[in-house]
Amino acid sequence: MLSCLAALLLWANWQEPNLHDYPAPVSVGALRLAGVQPGAQAAALHARLLQIPGITACTLSADAHALAFTYQPDVITPAQVRQLVARSGQAQEYVAPATPVVGPQCPIPQGYIVALERLRFALNMRRFFVCV
Amino acid sequence: MLTLTRKSSLTLLAASLLGTLGACKKNAEAPAAPTSLYERLGGLPAVSAVVDQFITNVVAETMTSNSKLKRTFDPLVQSGNSYRVASLRNHLIDQIGQAAGGPLVYKGLSMPAAHRGMNITDAEFNALVAELGKAMTSKGVPASQQTEVVNILAPLKATIVGQ
Image (cartoon, rainbow over all chains, first blue to last red):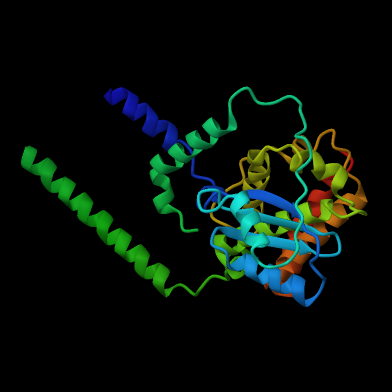
């Protein structure tokens, strides 16, 4: 048991942490909008979106009816963003994303890899000696 | 004998403590070193904010009708695998952080290895740099610092284009 713990700590502390381990993880979402006029209306919607907790960045291209945003999945979901945008009173239309591209995939579910990385960062004591 | 060992250990400890204090004092007296670009940009919060903005810019660009980045980024964006996009973001944070003089190193693939088989063109690379510029502008990065970032990343072009 003790040797397992020691091995775990050794694995976690073998390397310095990564810079990307420090900020909260984000994911990307995209929506098609209709009815948003370029200029003031688009700027207002953009500003409103950036006020939503969990949205870290957002790009609105009214000409292309495109909205892309990065969000913290632990705080907000794309469905909630969709609802919030729809509630803003403008006419929005959402086009479902294209069919996911099927191709060679890593046999290990990505969620497991992310969980392992988080565990490693949590146990990595070297992070306390890095000033980011 | 034991007492002697203990005494010498204490002496060593005291000496090392004094040495550390001395080093701290020396550091405090040393003239302030010029801050790195990483620090001037605003550290990790600024780097991650720019990278997030850059990614949303790129995704929005791929949704336009005359997109220059669609060919390269559509497979990533439309893969439905949010971890792949997150992985790109993580690598960008690490790489820009290191290039700007940040405290940690990029441990991902080399640029030729990461872009092998993608056949990225000059136009695509330039469009990507333009989106990075827009992201830095929208996050309030001064023009001089934008130039520094671009100058740091410019040599990578040869290792990315045409791979």
